[in-house]
Length: 270
Ligand code: SAH
Image (tube, rainbow, N blue to C red; front, side, top):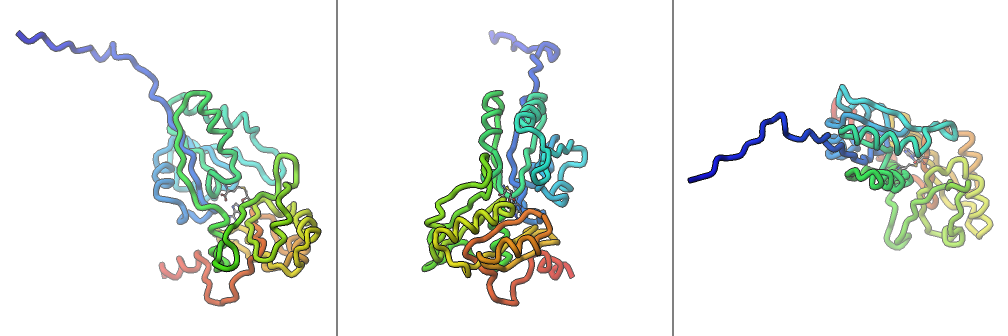
């Protein structure tokens, strides 16, 4: 004879809190169309979106309408939420069972303190995933019609920061000063004079092309073509204080046929 099935009344089923989930999401450089489909899906399902200052309003507008949006970004060198407070915030919401999107400008794996936040989650035994994004350099270089590497010119490219925890960041200036080198310098505006000085000191040609792309992929994008010799002056005179990427060794392609991606889009809709 078959033994009766043992069923548990619903009321005695243990009610474990649904474990929250954290997704580190690259928001891209600003243009919402540069989000990945995966990033969009996470944004449309997250209950809590913890974002940096560089995440554009257009991207934030894609979050679920009842999602809680929390800005932890800083303005230039101004006050920001302490990194430890950001960790506590992410952990708190994930522990409470929320689906948390930790949204960072560009790609999350570049200059974004990702490892520290992962370690905080690991310490709290919480699950996490990474959704990569388009980094500022990829977007900016596309809008000057150049490529980051080119056969016969440079077989390597550096993505480097102008700043580190100790101040202006030190790099291999000797190598960077060589003709044909290409570097995408993040957070390089305030360090421009320092970078220029180091490169010239190591023998770089003052006529080396340098291009600054400010607000890449946004409606107010600005491209400033200059040289190593004129870099600090041109920055001071022509940059308006938005996020800017400095390309060492690249000039905008001399072509009138590069269309801004925003213009291209507008044309398609027309
Ligand atoms: N994780 C980001 C970088 C964060 S560091 C990424 O992958 O793009 C912040 C720096 O990124 C800024 O100081 C600036 O140098 C660069 N940056 C970010 N967004 C930018 C944009 N839309 N246009 C130009 N530079 C940008």
